[in-house]
Image (cartoon, rainbow, N blue to C red; front, side, top):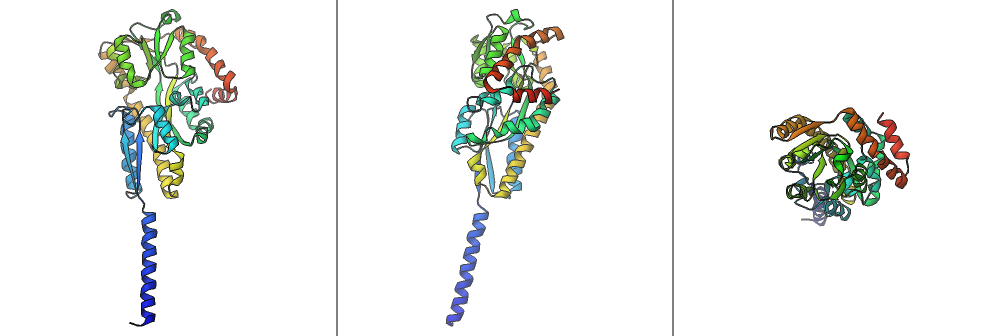
Length: 331
């Protein structure tokens, strides 16, 4: 073999090796951890599993999402902190549960903010919602979109029709200053508890009642230990699908697009899943023996008027620009 031939072979080998390295780099695999606090039979978990399957297919197997449900990988606060550190890649959390990190998000926990479900969706998916998602970036977190569980109602061992019904009443709330102020305005004593502790607290009498949308009251079986469900629909319960920003920025552009699009699809699927089961869940609750209480317009208006000062508490702390924009968008 001549020197020239050896050089050609060596050159070809170097080129092939470089190509192999480049291919390996492009085909790098990513293991992604997705933690949430919902039950395995919830629309949230079903949507997460579908997201994992679709991302695996769209990325040709380069991205594997492992989903942990029911708080298996930590509380909402712990998961948010893990996103900041990059040890967790995806999580969901109610806006109220991360108010300590981004307090402006409490605007969505204000009582009687939206006149209807459709207006709530319009605001969350519009310019105001997108601007609020952007507030997460200084926390090293990417807000992808808002998931929605619906409008909250209240359970108790008595009907909750008047302000007098809340006197001395211990109401479980999330650890959110705005939500706690709402119940003080109604005359109740707010008791912040983790979501997964609520059933036992209701059963033991540590708290007298709680608030949640119909689907979560059903999924967590709160109706088993509460005699009445009062359909107040007084505030939204929604939250955020979030990614670790450092992790997201480390992905190749094609995978960033796949992940972002998959997140938007996840939220749309979760919302649709909840909407499909609300009527069925309410029927199950009624059939269990729990009494369903519907407020008159006058009773609901009395609750709205009593809690209006809570809106001022928010504007005193964060100004009224964002709240006024929501008022205008929700008309």
